[in-house]
Length: 183
Image 1 (cartoon, rainbow, N blue to C red):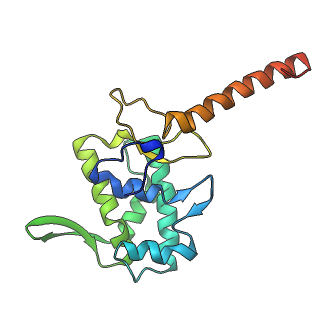
Image 2: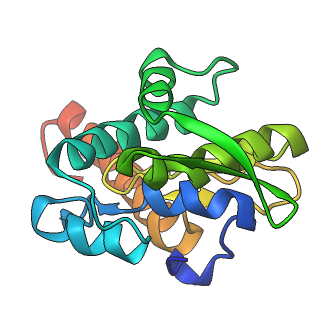
């Protein structure tokens, strides 16, 4: 489980694999856990030691397709996400009396918990509480614990404050342009 901005509470357990996958890239620092140099360690930490370059590239693509889907909260599963899930060759098996989603492929084992988490989130109706930060240079996935489900930023005093100050700056700059002199 990744640390959340500003001490925000993470998503419920079933959505943590998806939240963690979405947050494997920090857009501001450009650090990417799925970059070629770091992928083997990331996959190995999840018990998948046989993942290759094709799995890495496919997972990066899926991450961004999932980010777009979470941002839209479209009712239908987008085609690229459906195709990736089909490629994962997931199957459900009984382990210790419980159903478990798994796969024989490395890519499938890397995404099985993510897919299962989305399925559970849709079932318990908390799918729309997982959001993407509205700040374009952040795009962090966060779980909206607010009562009215209206959060827009991963943390209001971090991205929210930056976004609001940027809007104020643009507004002042617009007034300066109208008068032909600085605000």
